[in-house]
Image (cartoon, rainbow, N blue to C red; front, side, top):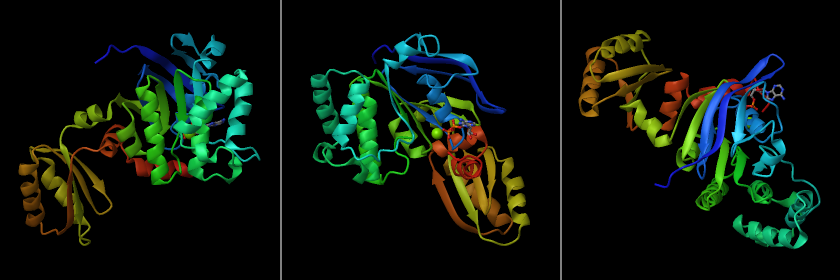
Length: 329
Ligand SMILES: Nc1ncnc2c1ncn2[C@@H]1O[C@H](COP(=O)(O)OP(=O)(O)O)[C@@H](O)[C@H]1O
Ligand SMILES: [Mg+2]
C-alpha cells in the first residue's frame, strides 16, 4: 500500500444557526486519494459540514484545513483546490449542456481553448457527449446530475465535494455516478461525499464517518466498522398473539452465552449472536419452551445498518423518517 498523506483535517468543528446546533465538535481526517463518505439521515449536519469545507459557511468554532490551507484564513487558496457539486442545482435555463459548462469556464477564467478541450473530455467522462448540444432543461434527472458533476470537475480540482450525488436517481444512473466517482479516485482525486444511502456508503466509500445529530458516532472503512461489531444478526419475527411473549422471550434468551445484544422490534427481535451454529438451535428451543411461534427467521452477516444502529441507537430508516418532518432539506 502506498503511503498516505492527509488531504483534509477537521478539528473540533461546530456550527450553530441561531439556537440550533447543526454540527458539534466534529473531527475527522481525509486521506489523499480516497473516497470519504459522510453517512447520516436528513438533518444530521452533512451539508453544513460540506459548506464549511468549501468555504461558503463560517464555522462557529473549530478548524478545518485542505492540504494544510485553513478554510477561513486561506479561503481563496482553498477555492482553487476544490470542486463542489451541491445537493440541488437547478439546471433549467435555455442553455445546452455544453453552454452551461462554457459559461462556467468563463467564471473560472479558463482560457477558451483549454475550456473547450476540457469540456469535451468531461462530457465524454459523464456520457453526455451525445446530448451536449441539447437544452439542459429537457434532460432527465440522471442527465442533469451528470452535468452537475461535470460542472464540479471543470476547475480540475484536487478535492471534489459531492453532496448527495445520487439522491433521487434511478438505479442505472446511480451506478453510473458510482463508476465516475471511482474513476476519479483511481486517477488520484480525493473525493468527499455525503449520502443517506447505506448501500452507497458500503459499496462506494473507502472510509465513512457516521454522523447523526451533528456529531460523528464512528469512523472507519465499511469493512472495519462491520467487523468491529462482532457477531452476526438474527432477526426473529413472531406470529401475532400473546403480547407478553415478547418480553418473556427476551428475558429467557438474555443470559445465553452467545447472545451479545437484543433489540426489540414491532413484531420481533433483532439479536446479535456469536457462533450461530449454537445460537440458532438455542433460540428455537427458547421459543418452543414458551410456546411462541416464529413466523420467520433471518440470519445475516453484519450490515452497515447494524453498524448505524449500534452507534446511534436507531435504524437509518427510523432516523430518516423522524427527521423528514423536522427538516425541509
Ligand atoms: N441556513 C440554515 N439556517 C438554520 N438552520 C439550518 C440551516 N441550514 C441547515 N439548518 C439545520 O441544521 C441541521 C443540519 O442541516 P444539514 O446540514 O442540511 O443536514 P443534512 O445535510 O445532513 O441533511 C438541520 O436541523 C437543518 O434544519
Ligand atoms: Mg444535506
